[in-house]
Length: 475
Image (cartoon, rainbow, N blue to C red; front, side, top):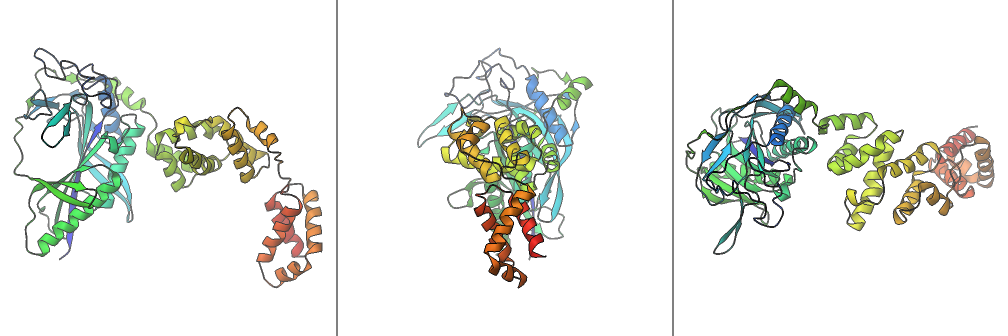
């Protein structure tokens, strides 16, 4: 029997703001434990929440990027449960009035583009961080109250690859909108998946299994595909799929049971009494959308029109800091492809070799653009410009022109008269190559081009050499 997987994702995104969702504590839970906490974060009596304006702007921008209906009235609710990571005994969230609903995102799959519907996006506060040891647990309240948006998809996803592509699309939106750094390995983007299977053609859903603790996009794909296979084996052997919560074990590349999951917990939601409903003006919502930085898809479209391939654009856009570096040099060159080539190959090789980030690169984007222009307008080859670049990187005080002079690099000539002199001499000295070319041996042309380049010490344009040699050989 063949089965169809039904998959939904819940993605929590830690928003990048100066302070927490409802307090003035700095939003920086990577610092020393319990050093960025206010009385409100610890639920001291008499403390009151104040809504973070930037968090609301961020949520509006993400909702708009996801083609959602945006609610102009903000209402918060209390989600009541008692656990050590929640000092108040409840979490402030948006259960009944999410800021965005009924959206979608389009992903690319091996079968073509696919629309994944999104049910809702809502704002809430994060819990504190727990550090578990053998016989005790430590609590770090720096994370308590960090502003989150939770993005809940509808069960339109059918395999691990689609889930990974969907999560990557969400990451691209939250990173390029300035909402979050989107780093899964640091917990800025956390993904829970719900997986069930059913026979093809069946409308009713199968038993849902939740998978937690997935910390990379690749692991999303691996965990889901393993879970689909595991559930299929159970059903084919006559066993039942048990409703449970599982985690992904990186060492074994399998999902492992954490706990059984009964019916939904009653969190006894009710409206947050300490935050009155907030009416957003049309101007506020419009300004939040208009002031949003250029998004990933818009940049991709613009890069393709500048001459980049899809793969080159994806490499640059995979890191927002690299994209920012590329942006600064793009208006200064004739062809964006040339600039991308240097960034992807030479610059990335230098960064990897020296264990540097693009922000630590001792070379301004404008300087790299000057080197690219030497190739585009002054007759220098890519190899010559790469040598100039290497010289400037090793001696950052040098300008590209000074590096060129120090290396005694001379631009290649495209003067047909000068090139013909070298061509005629090479043809005169290599009569057998002429015979070979006439006999259909195409490699003879490459050999002759090499001889001209050698004779001219690389000072002539190889494409012009090839063109003139071909004309002469056909006579």
